[in-house]
Image (tube, rainbow, N blue to C red; front, side, top):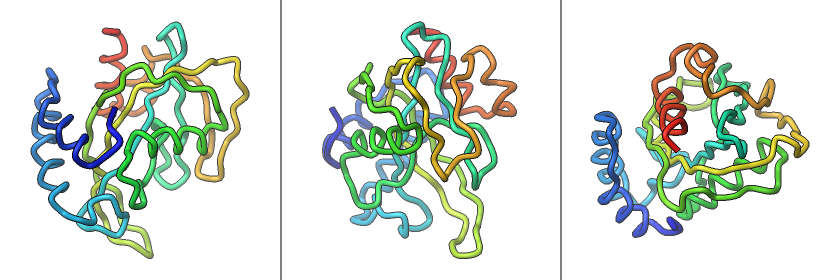
Length: 181
């Protein structure tokens, strides 16, 4: 399990992937983690975030939130805000953004890595999210609660991720990985 900075560094050093972009991300993550404030949202040009790729028990659906600020379908996730237990960050964000309480961690290590640009807002400059994604399972029968951070929250077919996300490479990559489970 990845609950400390040292464990995250070790996981990144040992992370294997068939995706060239993730291999490049590993190098950038390891460089970022040299900074004492890497887990704080005010660290620029970027900081650590944690996300949950939540699938149903059939592995045919994923739970996505239609992010209010970014206006796109994404996995649940958010800022570490100083918490170096990035697995805990991903789980906390999944609970806050979905209302779900019953998650099963399917993989105790990194499921996916991504570095993506967040646009400038009136109170904060453009910056990067260094996102660690974990794989969880949840029941489609449990009631969803849409948070104030979202326009919508829904289970979406994994086969439709490409079109639904306007060809977002990181979302497509997680969908592809799910099909291999």
